[in-house]
Amino acid sequence: MKPTDAELEILQVLWQKGPCTVRQVHEELTQNREIGYTTALKLMQIMHEKGLLDRMEDSRSHTYSANLTEEDIQRTLVGRLVDTAFRGSASKLVMQALGQGKASREELDEIRQLLNQINPDA
Amino acid sequence: MKPTDAELEILQVLWQKGPCTVRQVHEELTQNREIGYTTALKLMQIMHEKGLLDRMEDSRSHTYSANLTEEDIQRTLVGRLVDTAFRGSASKLVMQALGQGKASREELDEIRQLLNQINPDA
DNA sequence: TTGCTATTACGAAAAGCTTCGTATATGTTT
DNA sequence: AAACATATACGAAGCTTTTCGTAATAGCAA
Figure (cartoon, helix red, strand yellow):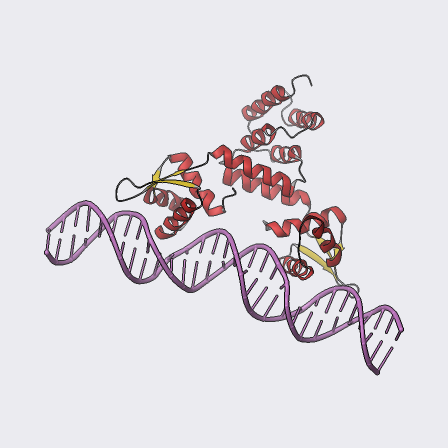
C-alpha cells in the first residue's frame, strides 16, 4: 500500500497527534501550506474507503486514525525505492543516505550499533 | 527533478545500456511488463521536452540518453523520502533499510568503512 | 515507381490525484 | 422555533500520468 503525497502528509499528522478530527488535521496542514477544509475532508474520506484510515463516528464529527504504523509505511516506501531506483541494493541506498552528511554523531553511533547486532564478527 | 514511475523505468534502461533508440528501450521494458511501442515513444518524447533526456537525431531513428546520472536521481529521491516519510531523519531511513536484512556481509563491511570515513573516532 | 516496413508526430482517451463549491444534516444559541 | 455555526456528503473540474490509435514521414525492396 503506497500512499500518495497528500495522503502521506495526513498520515504524518495522525502519527504525531494520534486520532484526530478533520478539523484538527486541517489546522495542522495549514501550518505548512494552503489547503481547503473540504479538500482535507475529501482526502480523508478517500483514505478511509481505501482502508488507510479507521473512522470513529462517535459524535457529530468523526475521528480518524491511521490504520498502518509509521514503520509499516516506511518499510513499504524504502522497499519500493530500493527496487525502483537502486536495482535492489539496500546498501547502495544506505551509502547514499549516509553520504548526504545529515546524520549527527549520535545517529552514526546508533547505526554502528545496529551493524554490530546484524553481523557482530566483522 | 523527480521522475515519475514510468520515467524511472526508462532511465534505468538508459543507465544500464547507455544511449538507446526507442526500439531498444521498448524491447527492454517488455521483458518486465506489457507496454506498447508508442507508449514508450511518447514517454521518451515527453522526457526529452522536460529535459530529462538528450536526443541525437542522427539517422532516421533517434537515439536518447539520460541527462542526469543515476546518482543524481538517487540523491533526489532519497532526500525526498527522508523529508516526507522520515521527518528529516536520514539515520532512521538507514536503520529501516538495514533492518530489512537484505544486505550481504560484504555490503555491511562497505557501510562500516564509510562510517569510519565520516566519523573515524567513534 | 510503387508498395512495404519502421519510425516519429500528434492528439486524445483513460485513470489517478488534488482541489473545492454547493448541498445537506446536525447540533447550538437566542 | 428560528437563525446560526459546524460537519459531512456529493459531484465535478483541473491537473498529471499513462496509454495507445491514427496519421504522416522516410527509407527499403520489388
